[in-house]
Amino acid sequence: MNTNLSFLKFTRSLVRHRSCGRACSPSEVPSNTKLTILPNGIRIATEETRSPLACISLFAEAGSRYEKACNNGIFHFIEHLIYKGFKSMTKSELQDLCFCSGIKFSATTGRELQVFSARCLPECSLIVIDIFSKMLKEPAFFENEIEMERYTLTKELIDADNDPKQVLFDYLHQTAFQGTPLAQRVIGSQRNLKSFDAAYCSMIIKDHYQPYKLAFVSSGCVKHDEMSQQVNTHFGCMQGDPAMQSDEGSCRFTGSEVIFRDDSLPYAHVALAFEAPGYNTTDYWTMLAAACMLGSFDRSQGRSENHAYHLAQAGGTGICERYEPFYIPYRDVGLWGVYFVAHKMHLEDMLYNVQKTLMGLCTMSQFSDVQRGVNAAKLLVARSVQGTIDSCHDVGFQIMYRCGRQSLQDSYDCLSSVNHNVLREVCDKYLYDRCPAVAAVGPTENLPEYNRIRAGMYWLRR
Image 1 (cartoon, helix red, strand yellow):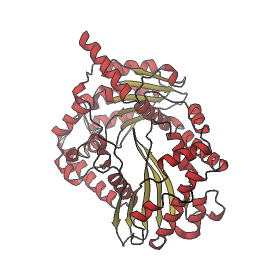
Image 2 (tube, helix red, strand yellow):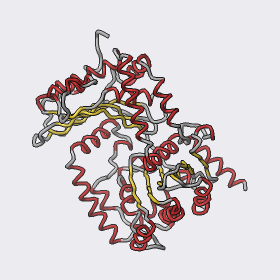
Image 3 (cartoon, one colour):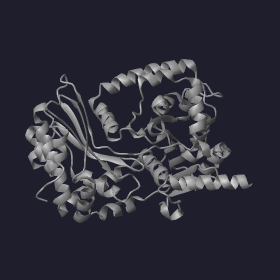
Image 4 (cartoon, one colour):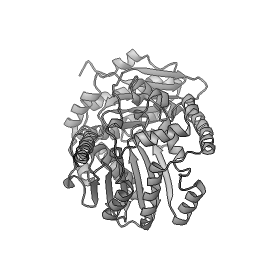
């Protein structure tokens, strides 16, 4: 009894540690969202709606941040193999069951989280939970499936290397977080791919997928009590091992640049990024609004000179093909910046306008511009919870990062509190006179050197 109580205290404290240091309470979730934590640490969250369909997802703390250089890509490899059959169910039996029940499974792997999802009718939730249970308790990695997926992933690696944007953002993470696990690619490398086998995949499933790293989330017409009972029946007996707590690694940001020159490409792809706050910080909402203030532009748009965003007006003069801001938040750090595609002779002009706009955010943000960005951010947040699938993923991300869910109205209130004075202060903190991380792919001969880019991050006339 004492052992069980001590392990329960460990799992509760670990959940608090992984969710910005506080335990969740019923007041922290909207009325239609309910949260339960089992004694072994598994989190169960449900959002009850009147949708005729349900989305049930299994979230796990897994990804390239939890990998080492020697096994980088193992979680992405497991993602491709997990639905290929179990010890008590063959691949064909699983496919027949999904076809007859109308269940559609999917899986995604990121740098910090891995998500297994199922879209189904509410009455099929028991089948979905049972399949998730077989995934973790009865994984069967057959040699023929391993070789087939190894071939598929080899082609996926080739396709990824042929996509300039994907290569660019992989390079951006490598230079911004160099020497840390966040620098690793999700897809891994060809060398590691050849070394993965069934025994190693089974060991990773057993050792890494501990109960205190898991969360079951549903959105739709699924009752919370039924969901909790089903999960407790299948996973309540899982006992976590405190020794298997994974190390997230450091999140050190390094201002630097990486350039892959390829004159065969018609345009250059460039990203300028800065160290930004993580998902759990109060500055997250301000930086989200700041990203929305930059707008976006594509050359296919007409009448760009009448665009509301100043950077889009500059892009419409022909100095870029397209641009878009990005904000990639992680648990404790993030990347915030601008990605653009331009002709090699216009790189300096476009970069000048980007830095001019960023300095304007820090020093000359106007009330009307901030309100436009806040309203655009509210629209972005609203779109992230429309439908059962998006809403389920939103609940899962918040449960994994915060151990609680913030309602849409609370998110609106956080964004409404951002004014021009707050935005100037926060942008000055993260952007003004800061060393950026620069990544470029393509004909980059005319891209200014890093010292000149760094010098453009402050104004002497401030």
